[in-house]
Image (tube, one colour):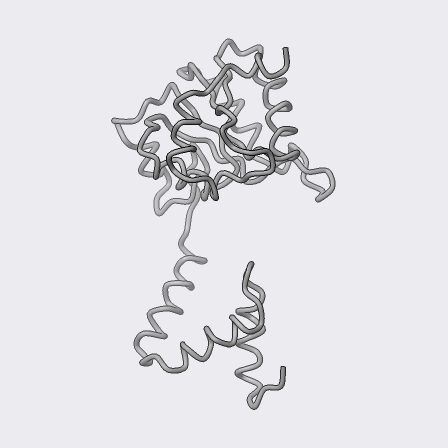
Amino acid sequence: MNFSSKLLEQAVAEFGRLPGVGQKTALRLVLHLLKQPQADVERFTTALDRLKREIRYCVTCYNISDNAICEICASHKRDKGLVCVVEDTRDVMAIENTNQYHGVYHVLGGLISPMDGVGPSDLQIDSLIRRIEAGGVQEVILALSATMEGDTTIFYLYKKLKDFGVQISTIARGIAFGGELEYVDEVTLGRSIATRVPYERNIA
């Protein structure tokens, strides 16, 4: 693609680095921004700058937050004895949209994937164990994507948690193998949470 401006080319290149954004889409976005009032563009860039500089991660569950403790962990209406373990913030948002879960979360920050060089030490697994050791947790729901990496992570977590005396369950597999939670419709995901099953049944 030939550009009439180096500045345009650089902007398109940066947008093109975003996941799922090809060069044509990046160009369309950049040209759109060029047509917007200066104040709108400044508001857009300021929001991104503040996001990168000021975003925090909850010290309890590691979900993205504006404060040291996220709104979910701070809420007195949530069942602190029920912890739903998810891959990332997108999964928290997907489950919250079902309006059928009233416990709290623990965000791993990824899945175990030896092929990608991601091991247990790269995830928030030790912090989950410390959280359970502190007491008060009755059930851990392993709500991870139905993929090879998700199943590997679930099995690893089960081995780590099974001797703590907490119930360990997984979401019901109304979700096809290979499916990621963020793309599952809210009704199916909500039912999968509500009809969760003890993990032991899956390995018996």
